[in-house]
Length: 295
Image 1: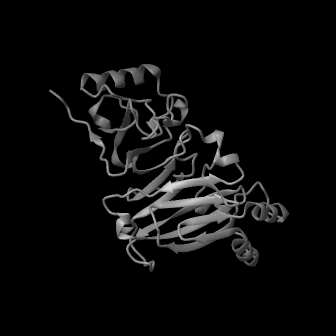
Image 2: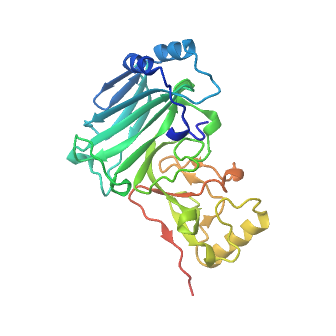
Image 3: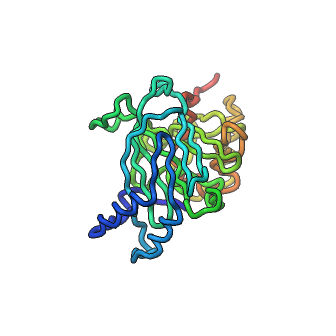
């Protein structure tokens, strides 16, 4: 898993910056919107290094600016495609206008590839306030997994996938570029911190909608990080939603891939992660459905 893959938790390689620079030149090749990782060279260098496997260590950190020739970011391992991210046109980013991507590409000693950055009008990166950034974070890739298949993460939440980090709030103006476990297509979402917004969220049966319900709208509504939620409590809440005309929304409904409809965050299979997934997720260019009392 990529749990707690925050930059702030990653140990720096003090004293071996020269080795890092050499490694970066050896293993990463960037050509327009394509990134190729020389995995055999990366694996050899990491295995020959004296880095403890007990620590999460950043071994590569490359900053680059891309002018995309399309709305894709394609990742190759030894010249074989392992991930294809589609950067969807949004209200603030239409790639027909040829915007730029300012990216930070990191590789960790557990072979995790982590990429995030900013969509910008200018090829020159400038300092901005956090709420002014059109940010983007790509679902991390485990380079030593066969065909980018990580069974441990199947159906798990965004913290396990390395898209959110405990102790750090992901701004809602940062989009997340996810990859479906089943069809492998990518899709873009925004996440909203439900605890800070003082609401509980529910996904629809088909996983295409997100309902936002204020905590005080339903009696004894469980909040985020609320432990030991009883089956009776869940049934009562789902029943209340049905009575109010929101029967298609349920507490343990999964968040689904918009293409093949496979569960992406599967609360039905992994109910234990529901309390920790305190971000409500919404597909790009969609709004949350607001709960309204119906007479």
